[in-house]
Each structure stands twice: as C-alpha cells, then as structure tokens.
Image 1 (cartoon, rainbow, N blue to C red):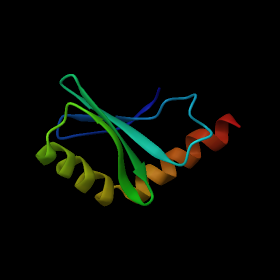
Image 2: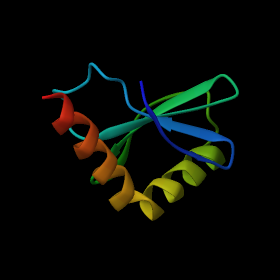
Image 3: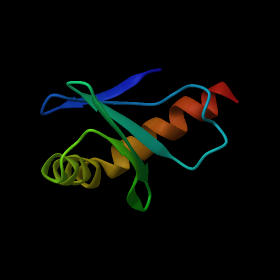
Image 4: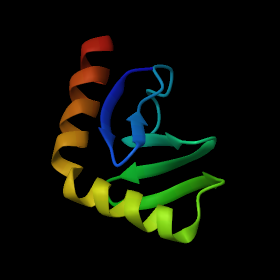
Length: 80
C-alpha cells in the first residue's frame, strides 16, 4: 500500500488490491481513517474523523486532485 502524500499529519495512500474501483485515496491519522473518491471528490466512508478534519482532508484532496489522479493512474496502470 503505497503512501502517495503526507500533509498536515495525514497519510494518503492506496490499497494495492483495489484495482476495480474508481480512483480513490485512503487517509489515516491518529487511529482515524477515511476513504475519498478522487474525481469527483466525495467521502466514501469515515471511521473516527471529525467534520472539521474531513473538511480539511477534502480541501487537501481538492488542492492535490491532479497529483493524486496522476499517482493513481501511474500506480495502477503499471500493475495491470
């Protein structure tokens, strides 16, 4: 599971076995975890993050959306 970004204490990463789903990113910090679809940016699931933290994560994803999509396609196209 490659980490593709660390920002504001959040770890953004992909699971290697999730090739059949649309582009998304998992985010962890301090025992909390969530999953966001990258395009369009939308929360898929949340375990423990507050609304403030989810908004912060969403803002990071929006600001890094092109980068995250590029990393997704680079990683999963290489594996196919």
